[in-house]
Amino acid sequence: MNTATSMTGTRVDDWRPAPDLVDAIVTASHGDPFAVLGPHVLAPDALAIRAFAPGAERAEIIDRATGAACAIMERLDDRGFFAARVKGMRPDGYRLRLGRGSDTWEKEDVYRFPSPLGELDLYLIGEGTHRNIYEKLGAHPVTLDGVHGISFAVWAPNAARVSVVGEFNGWDGREHPMRRRHEAGVWDLFVPDLSPGAL
Image 1 (cartoon, rainbow, N blue to C red):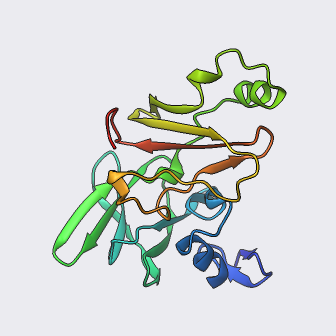
Image 2: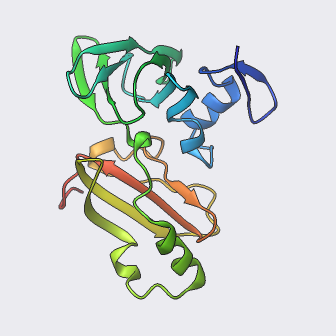
């Protein structure tokens, strides 16, 4: 069985993170959410998919092309942390179906998307010579992997954590922590299905 090491060195299996990692995500104290959430390749034909959805009681992975259910996610923490091991799926081939009581809803997994900033952008920002930095920092409508949304980026080299908050996530800073780009002091995140004008 594949194993991974948690922040405190606890050994865990290949798709369920250690309790300290789960707690760090649900308390918004983890500085690198992409290391825990989203899809992680376990083997050529297997993924670990992890999601934090504080308003959900249940979660499943669905095929983004067909809408068919592929796996029921295990609820590892009552605060809304879910995980599953899935075979035969690409890292960009799924959506999440969440539920609470009799309500169900679908959403893209924010943590499956690549960074909206390219390596050249990061190099030039870090060097202080990016001539069009206003096109990269802030909030900008973009399309990533065929999905429309908003790209957020902020320069905050001394921050321990940065989140995107708004009406779309109930102003909950736990739901959309950003990716830290150490080489440039920048934090970024693509939020799918968000439109210009959202508060």
